[in-house]
Image (cartoon, rainbow, N blue to C red; front, side, top):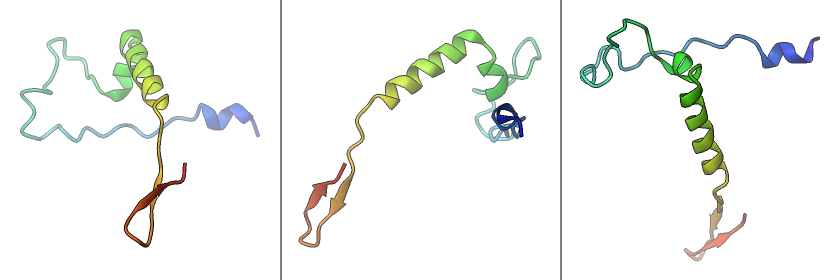
Length: 78
């Protein structure tokens, strides 16, 4: 099996959960008539770069995991 086949397979189309909501005035259509969703926005270089920068910044933040003890306290485990 081609190792890249699974990596580049087509994905499910995103669902627009705001299409019939009270937020249509904010997330309405565009003046050009083009559909803008997650997939088409990520094809724009500026949007992709901003999302990548934010994702890398969030990924660099420390993640502390705690476990609650029986005496009501908590201890850091990671």
